Length: 602
Image (cartoon, rainbow, N blue to C red; front, top):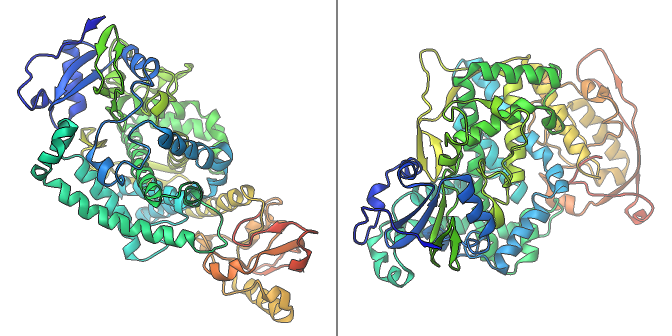
């Protein structure tokens, strides 16, 4: 066993910090070319190990996974993480319970399937933004589009609300959570002296860090938001249980719930970053974009949207995502780890308390591993079994081992659905006279230096896209719950239901003011007739329940024993005749199917 020596040029107190630029992934890549795939640096007063090869990464993350199962001290974990209450610090029973919650309540196959309608809902909103920009002949800010999609998809799954974008579920005060998340990122990237000194010196040096008061003010805003959300979730309601409900049932300490939800919201940004890089690479490599669209036409066809069941057949699109994550991993240095005990890596002795950095950026561009490593070549992954799920250490954008990113399956589902449909549904180009470079910058994640702005032209008619989005989203809602749901889109049908409600007091219990288009799909271009004809999806048709009136829904758990529908379509758009409906009394609950009106149709 050899002693791992520090590289040269260490200075008192700051160690090798003067060798690290604003792009640390590139600085460390350059140093690894000179000193080898494993280096021993002193960042401030903290001993640090930097590995830059698949072999060293495997030895550190897999062979010594238990030794490097904890995280180093980070100011954000102390203040924003409610004094290290989240998953991202010490490896303990507490962190294992949180990871187990992720597996069982967030990324289990049935949970991913049940949240599919949320992803289609946000996809619909993204398509509307693109259609509007095409009508106005203006470029789309893709960073804003992707951030809106991923953040709202995550908040809907975690907390049953969306807080960012054109329309939200609450007021301006609630929209602030996205701004708080953005400010956390801005502060996290700054230099914090307390992160580079031993624990016994932190209390003496806090006054030298001007970001600590900023973090504490930001934490107050964060805590105010989280308290309000937790209060809402503790109130009786008939809405379906979400991830925060599961956390509140499992953890008595509210600070743990607040910290974990915040960490998951911070992680959602990586999905948006990856999507922006994919689109940027496609625009700089139009032949790749053309091949991807050809594959989508071949597998999916021109008459429908891309479904999650199509992903396994889209080999070239999968290769594009892998190639992008190889060249531009959102977390180029992964999340640092800390050694809880002394260990050996590559035959070198690593002392206890060392911080580990895995340079995924350098591994992805290593010429000894990849042919022409700086070129964008998705073809390199065709016919190969390489994936990014932690077993192939030449491609580890999500990490590996015990502390691998727990939300990876959810992030990939969102990323694949969004990208596949954007590539399939639109032709893309830079604004006239503008070609954006692929220059990157490091801001906790690896971002394009300038937000990507593109022109989108629908490859299919706008009415087709809107209609298909609505139908597919409703289909996903229908297939992911064993309950009854339907949508009213015509005034005449609402009037028919109101009339029936006035004649039948049992039916009147369930008929309230209805918000058409509960999930805000564009019903102008969707005919009820089209939905009614769409195979047998809406054989059982019913509508009168809405999340807009949770207090009424709560009192109205009803039993639908049998619903019969007669759907006749006239010559004029929107004319519909519906329903001979029999509603069983709630006293007959054991005779029928117990259905929740806030949920949806099977």
